[in-house]
Length: 183
Image (cartoon, rainbow, N blue to C red; front, side, top):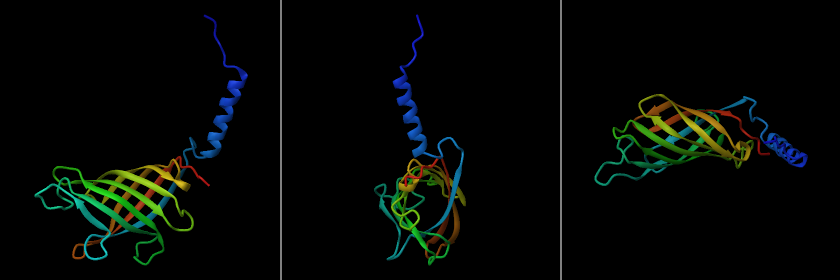
């Protein structure tokens, strides 16, 4: 059987598509990283709560330590740890206590940016958060706008927690690899 080679027109078309893809995705294969640090302002009780239980196992208390409890989240995201720091956006999504012993919460969050630099862009974060640990890592699975095709990881660290008010500040350190600047 004789070897066959693609026609020059097919080879040129493939090469052109490859060049366009590389131009639209400048980090692809380059190994470059982008590091972002933000703070989630989390309030669990009261009239200004940003986390609220929305479902759970019938007959059981809905809590972070009870298997099957699902929370809706809409935390303020700021540039610094202070509540009055410049707002960057909102962390919106769901938390679900996914371990039978209540030790892990599954996180499904979209960081919805509203600041000038990333306005309208999002990052999608998901993974298992081990509640008893101060440092937790979850995956960055995608994004939109300036973060189109983003992937990487996000480290969540408890920066501050007041058990009386259940107000907490969580440092969110995001490391992105192979992100695409969509603009």
